[in-house]
Length: 245
Length: 245
DNA sequence: CGGTCCATTGATATTCGTCAACGGCAGTGG
DNA sequence: CCACTGCCGTTGACGAATATCAATGGACCG
Image (cartoon, rainbow over all chains, first blue to last red; front, top):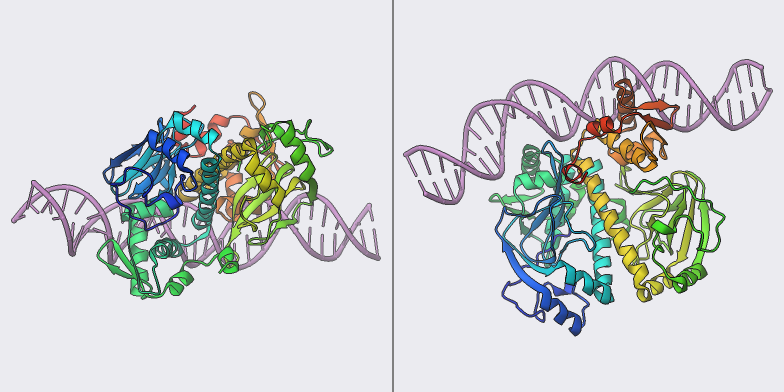
């Protein structure tokens, strides 16, 4: 759910220089724990559009996203589908104690994962409070983000949904004062599946925000914004944000 | 988010006979840990309708729900509001490492909490892997439930939303084969705020489901159902459920 | 050059929200 | 005991937001 702009290299082998480590599940590991993780890890890659795990299918590894963007989704039998989470670099995949995935996991762009075999990873989790507590903190952050998304899905208008999505994305790539610019990691269809809308409505709202001068569109995948305040005003400000500036 | 029918007595003082312990954060504690928890715990009660914590306000305790039902909600500045979680007996309140609540917490019915002072509880969490790992498992369950609710909010019709809500409730109170019966822990307005609907739409869908013979309504707060299969068919079956019968 | 995929735009349909009136029930006070 | 009042839920009429259906446009690729 968290949107980050980290784009580390995939050539790292040891963990010492791993660019995602400051935010990943292994962030607070000591040397012994890093060695243990290093021993059970495997880098794997998927092409954009490939399915990493099907909904309800066995998942025999845990993993951290190293590069790229993956989606978590759930579906109804008749095919209606909802993306329930975005996985970006440093995000964690897998559920200790469970052998199958409740969600489909798909590569939105080319994706590299640092995978850990399930059994030894869970054993390590028992022994290493640093890994366990980091995973708890990450899970609670994820829970908060997911609940914020519930507010969006249940109560925001189409325009507010699109504005909120763009704002979250732009905030992650902000390096200084505007103008801000970012590449959309998702197609229109995926955005619609994430926001609980149809592809046509997403398209219309993007056009409308552009015509109103809130954002700029540079090609299909690039969004710019000169004034994040303005975009925020379009996104349906939340009480919690107002209280915590 | 989990719906349970546990209605334990509030007169328990020690933890030994605590009726929620099998499912609570203290489920796997050893005797020493129970003594430590016992030392920092306080039972507190709130009347139906009272606010336990305001959105964004300081929260100086963690807690387990002992009896009753509370809601977690988030709001937009203009007053639109979404319930993002139901807290039922054995559910946990609080976020280790954070001093304020991102959500409003309100008593839907009379509520009793077993509260733990924040600082000593967090200290205990560092020392007691049993508590930490139980909290992780509960958080991950909560995350799954919240994501399932995202699918409901983003993709289900009003009728399916109401049917899903009733089904979840009835399943928790099931003791054998039908007919099933349960009391709604929420008012029509709270149900609407949970399902991303208006109160009128909830009312219409309940009436419609009753007229179609899917459910029975006995007074305002009591729902019966002779055929959970039928109710399930109305609730928009999920792929994950189909795969895991 | 033609085909395919993705996005945009327009016309129309549908669902659900909004506004308004009403009814039942409980509590209150005469 | 009975009117009065307020709250909650139901029902109906209407309107607005978004989905659906359909046509078109543009980019990429063989």
